[in-house]
Length: 295
Ligand SMILES: Cc1cc2nc3c(=O)[nH]c(=O)nc-3n(C[C@H](O)[C@H](O)[C@H](O)COP(=O)(O)OP(=O)(O)OC[C@H]3O[C@@H](n4cnc5c(N)ncnc54)[C@H](O)[C@@H]3O)c2cc1C
Image (cartoon, rainbow, N blue to C red; front, top):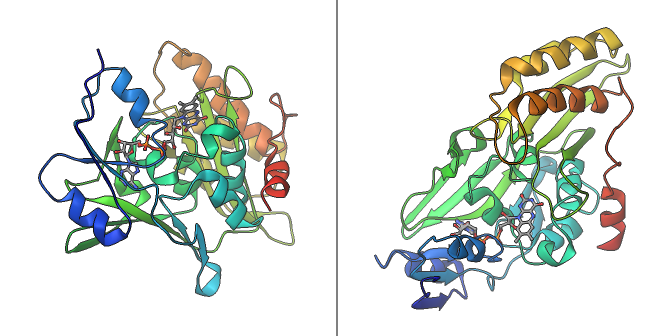
């Protein structure tokens, strides 16, 4: 039987949330509830929650030099609308995330805090060099994405802390996210890839950032593949070298959804697809559609 939630507090302000999460009752944050409530049914005991879903604030704030601040407690639908076409990798990730009903509840903070290596918004945030902005009673911390992701279902979130926002440097010229899964909607990623780069006038990629999900204990940067692509011409030979380098960046495992060998082949194939070296095997991501739907 699912253990009951015996205490639920609603935070009206960020200060409320700090106070309510620091009372020593082991209360945990509840945002959209699309993961936490499912975890309870799988046996996780959650005696007390602090509901963050009513916190006010702009989902997306534009800062100096094109940087962005994203509210961790806003729904993915509101984040997509607020991005207004900027940050294509995250827009793509939201477009392939679950289905509209879940996107209307699920949040970036909730997706990140689960520590799932298959969490779909995390590759885009990692590739963007996002900074996680944490707070609790009388404290504020900023942690890079690389340092925040500690292991499977483990993140650098201390007792009483919650994720208030994500800070992102100005998004680059090109970017996107693709996901391989058992079906087009409501499916956990078997492999996912987010990328961003600038293209110089000679067709060379610079500032290359690649991050992959569901192929290691955490979402990972593909550092070796990035090094192959950085400043190199966009040729089939370079694409093949980069795809070969992916294997050294990842540590996939066999699980119920896919075998490690399948994931390795998918990972290399996905990169070749996004480099335009082979035609896409998965349907194109409908991010343009979500952008127009939520404008
Ligand atoms: C039908 C279905 C389909 C799904 N499809 C996908 C999918 O395609 N891709 C995908 O990645 N996930 C998917 N999920 C999982 C889930 O929707 C996501 O992980 C979602 O982003 C969780 O966000 P939430 O706001 O609902 O978090 P919650 O369920 O409220 O919380 C999840 C965890 O994060 C903690 N938390 C929440 N907010 C904060 C915060 N601000 N600071 C600190 N800790 C916090 C909670 O305490 C809890 O441990 C799916 C779930 C369902 C039920």
